[in-house]
Image 1 (cartoon, rainbow, N blue to C red):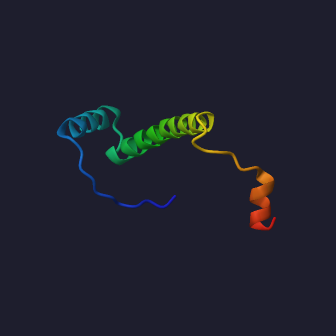
Image 2 (tube, rainbow, N blue to C red):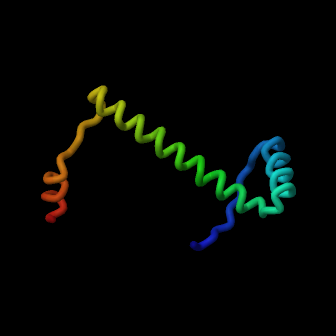
Length: 75
């Protein structure tokens, strides 16, 4: 996997926690942040799925049959 350097701003409390955990576990901060974001994105995926199901139930969105999608794509 290709790594990309990024810059962002977080609260001093988060930095203090990150520094503390990094030192205690003897792990790079970037590795801890990457794992934490990955876990958070997994949780967001679940939240988004729940929201999409609710939208279907509330008739805010509709399902499109696969046959229609395949036809439109020429498959």
